[in-house]
Image 1 (cartoon, helix red, strand yellow):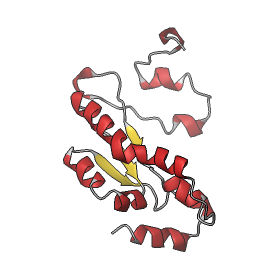
Image 2 (cartoon, one colour; image 1 turned 180 degrees about the horizontal axis):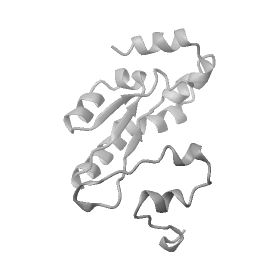
Image 3 (tube, one colour; image 1 turned 120 degrees about the vertical axis):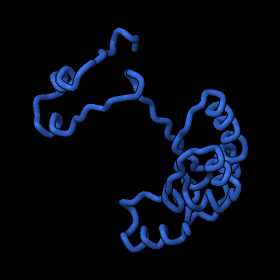
Length: 146
């Protein structure tokens, strides 16, 4: 898409008129006032999943798929360094979502992210899908993160 495909909205009312005329949409819109007259806000959200999705999906599969595991380990081993350097170069802070198993497997990861003043958030224990586990299991996984 080209920049001509995107509309620039200056007010809440101009934005509301582009949405379907249903109160469920228009009632939830609020104006955001940015500092220094800025017109745009950007959020950088980075998932540091490493091998956790593989471990969650393959809990009963005893085969070791080395290729997939090694690909997923690239992120914490080297990818994070590249991302952190780029963010620092541009003075950007980001939110990093990290499964607990990744934090425990790579113990230097969270301190490094926090030292660089980034936000770190819980991303499950094994990157599990919440619709596939009970509330009790979810609470147990969360308690393991301390």
